[in-house]
Image 1: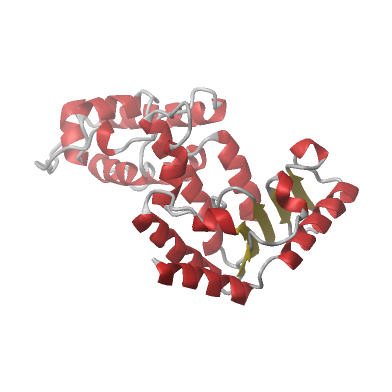
Image 2: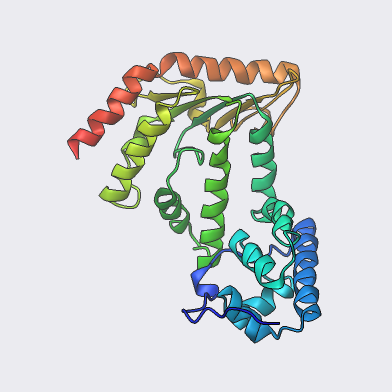
Length: 291
């Protein structure tokens, strides 16, 4: 088979950190192993050696072997190039629909799935910004600050997973999303001044979306029900809901109507004590102006 060989630098694992398969995710392991096997069978069916195929798609031979062996998760770009090189007529590209579902850790997928279904999302954070609001640089700085530190590949995997949840803002119809942020983490220079400025600009950008309400809780306010930790509320089209408050019901997610009423009362009280959305955006703008 004749292929056009890309003579540029081939991509290696160092270029694409964070794409390893989680061995504890049985479904993910099965999906990636199946896709890898399909890729290998199609390559062999057209008589291409792994080395030639690697050059044709622009990846290192070692990375090709790992993807075919189910050890690495292929990017969408890799699948599209493989489809083109192997003349698969879109069948390889179509596997991305399954691959993207297992791209992120199991726990993050479960949370992202709920957020993707919700018509209303409410989040209060006590000590940091919600992952739905973080820039990549801010998220990376927070994750890298963990002790003991995560391996670099795990850091990139976690950053990518956190950013993937932000697709909730692109949904149509858009869900109603509201956040309450404590003043202290908004002021904290996570990642340095430049990263902090970019994070503040991002907060303003998200806070101005028509379906988003963003409020800041001033440090000089009275005690409120959120001081025990994070509160989340998700409501769904069928009228059901799930909520979690770190200071109530052992911090576990609950769908019990009585417990949900308690969490809703806590969250409503917090929103009432925080700055209004307009005052909150003005506060963030003022912080930007002071840098």
